Length: 618
Ligand SMILES: Nc1ncnc2c1ncn2[C@@H]1O[C@H](COP(=O)(O)OP(=O)(O)OP(=O)(O)O)[C@@H](O)[C@H]1O
Image: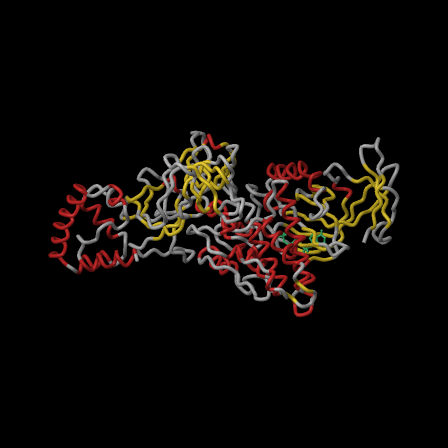
């Protein structure tokens, strides 16, 4: 490999390097300018042969030839030739890379970038060439897997490299062993700099869209359809990290032997996770397990991952594997005190004195677990590490001690997890209703919106609180929606069918099932997706008449209608009378909240129908 001595020449517009390296590759070695402009003249690149074929293009071995009156030099480089992009959009990609070029070169853990060029209309990215990748090392290792001390070392390098890319505002979105290159000191260097991220919004010509945002075996659920299931965020790379470590430890890529469709079904529809082998240090096992949480907010950040690997590294003895269970830290496996949140989620924000707080609601569920605190002010933080903080509540003389994780910070009236709506009426091609992912104390907010691949970032003053949606609620498309963002079944010829919310995705997109209908979809999924801006709640309270209320009962289970028919005219008559009585009674004395409860009181229904509804609730 090349040895490099750099000589700086202050007055020149570039630096000089002296190369003392492989004579086959560096035939004329004198002094070479370290290219400080990213653009490489196409005539300077001479292609030799293809090294590999990737999702976004092919990688070629090439020489980069530079000469002037003062120097003449050849470098061996790896050139990634991207699949063709639309002309104007390709230019956007080039400009993005050019803008980041010098900062990318400062990243120790990321492949050294020689420059960028365009040959026959295809973008060519010239990088330093490395001997081999982790994938190559796995392929030739004994037993097809790496030793645990090596996995720990590479894991630390990989986490550091990803953190460096994140610090430039880039997501890698393609963490996998073949993108983990090894330098001459056996350090892991990331062989990509977020190409999928820089390609976001740029359609590849003649390319399989399903493969656009990564490599299937290593892709997080939100990477498959980021506009529907996004947003792509820092924790998306945690999933790919977890997959890469599993492959290093077992020698087998996650979902091995499965087709593209089967992987999609496992990860996205069935919400399955890759299985984690035994023998990892507990803190590492714990953090890797967290990497496979379906909701990216529940996954660890790269800092958490790095900390777990660094703290466990010393206790992994060469060749022996994990040896010191006493040193393990299982603290993050403790159950979170609020339903739906992992401790990784809760550890992303810390309360400070003077923060306004309120009780944290369970994630995507309606019922608070305890009597909620509406508003308090933090007056003392968790200094004794008990997890308790002191909160001043108006009307209560002394501050009270409360478990920190059961509280959420309220900034400009908003808390992470709130449903929000964009106030401005400007046209945007994503939903205007979404879920707040974070709000900083300075008002900077991050929101996931359906129809948007990445987080929306902006000032909290542009947002207002929106109506929330919860699991179990019934919704249908608003009558005035003529072109739904996602396909939706109809009921009869004119109206939209009503379905039940089975899952709320991190961008506010609703996954809806139709228990009242037999619905078969092309992709075998029983779920439809809905843009929260395009739906309305359906409750007994919002159904205007008895017929509509009965129709809503049909939404609960497909058997309701045949049962009702089977019960015949007598039942229908009884049902009509009972509904009249029950409804008038309900409207007369029932509270609004009761009315809005799904199912409400089922006593007025014929017994078989009531049983079905009760079963649905249990
Ligand atoms: N700078 C480099 N030096 C040496 N080998 C490289 C370099 N960059 C990539 N490679 C190798 O070239 C092959 C193809 O790489 P490429 O990154 O295009 O494919 P991939 O990793 O399979 O897919 P993707 O396009 O999704 O990244 C891989 O085996 C990779 O290890």
